Length: 156
Ligand SMILES: Cc1cc2nc3c(=O)[nH]c(=O)nc-3n(C[C@H](O)[C@H](O)[C@H](O)COP(=O)(O)O)c2cc1C
Image 1 (spheres, protein in one colour):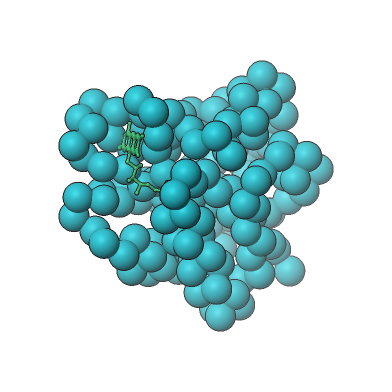
Image 2: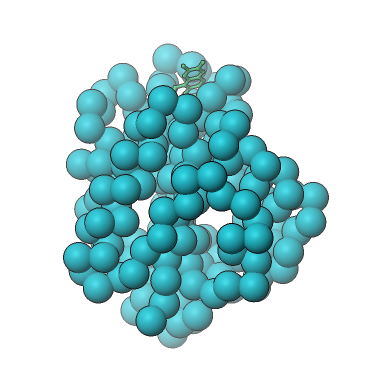
């Protein structure tokens, strides 16, 4: 069965809690899911199946430190994975203005460079408005999973 790998970037734990809630919900719907709390490129290289980025934003629109090595290796090595489905859930805070949810854009750009295929619109979660990010992320992720799973090219 196809396994969904969740790539977590989190400073204070909000995105990690969100990823865990999403993984539980996906599992409950029959989608095996692995939460990668400190992802390395080796965790996904040579594997198949969709990738779900679940990251917060830090610094000035930057990727959190625990996801940074993955991001940098991805950008440097550009392992080609044509058509591999991916989605993006990104936490941020709109009071940061132009850098709002910037980490999601960085991850998306790097994944697109590898030939991976984005499924669904990025879900941005604004800490100014949403206290419990998993309440937005879970329904979004279930819909996302049905999208890539049902399409003819969604089959890994
Ligand atoms: C030092 C710091 C820098 C941040 N920089 C940004 C930013 O540039 N853009 C943004 O949208 N949110 C920014 N945020 C907000 C966080 O992304 C947001 O609070 C998020 O919910 C934190 O998730 P986490 O608990 O997984 O780290 C920043 C937060 C902190 C504390």
